[in-house]
Image (cartoon, rainbow, N blue to C red; front, side, top):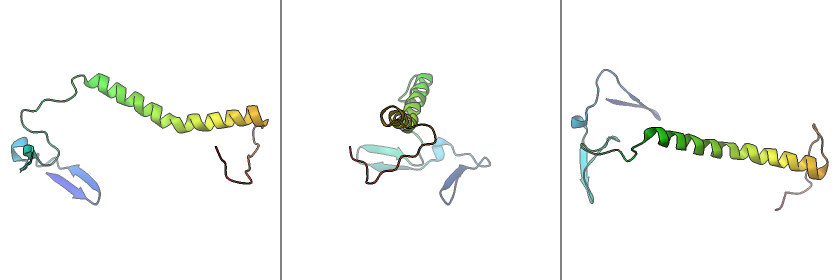
Length: 99
């Protein structure tokens, strides 16, 4: 049984939901599409190598999450090299930055 409290959704351990109990809805191109996020009976997973897929996703997330840090580091390195700044110097703009 799914419990919804505010925006939190949890699963109750006292009454499990089995695939046979999940209601289905028929629509155009989707006969007996299951409700509740469960795949239809007899369906096959779209990913065959889960270990590879997880490693790929984690690597992709690591690249995306580090982009802001790389941009800040590059800006700081450029300020040191091109503007002659040192540690604890503050950059102040008189107008907004333009490309």
